[in-house]
Image (cartoon, rainbow, N blue to C red; front, side):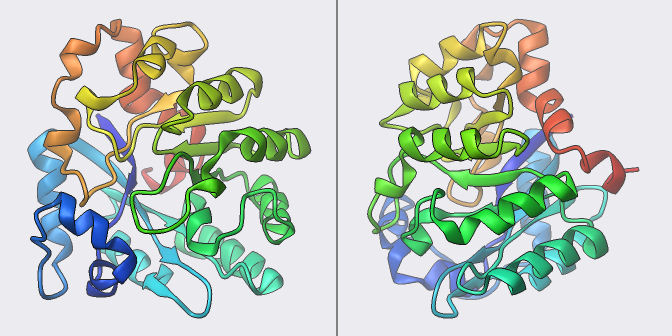
Length: 277
């Protein structure tokens, strides 16, 4: 069963935000004019044989609320056999952020924390993150983030794997980190950091199978890389069928394909077993 580790069910607030103008150009400016039912997201998963997905909440500074934890919790409750949540928090309120993460994991069954650094213009080495890293370790959930350039109209510097992910992994060797969007144009840096640190992983969200950088696909075929790369779509920016098209052409072994599509996700997101049982 394929697991998608980076997807969002978009609210109208998310789709209408000015910073996503570049994404609207890529999709032909064909954004809907009203909130969409969660069943459309489930249908996209069904069309591609994706059995389970991790829905991300999105929050930024100054009260920017694009997809709330409450909304994600509601969608997960409507399809608990298909969806789990990744929490968002307010970095400007550190203790409230820690308590929110704790509550969402313990009470609502969320399986990780996602913070998108370019939304905050704060790299992951900023002190605002560090209480959350400690709490992720205590809760046994991954810290999920974005690496590489930003498609949205925001600066890209916060997405550098080196120094940012490298230094976080040095400071918190027990922290499980999942880096989405493959790190392009610094994919070689991202692969190097994943090789170096036991608990650093990469997900392929925002890239179709046919557009995955060759240095990443080569890494996936190594003994280390086979256990380090997870499938993600970045739905709705990329539909699930489109994201997986060309999978047979990657030349992965049966074992590597198993790990990429679901084995690594089941191992990295340890709470998945609890929410799916």
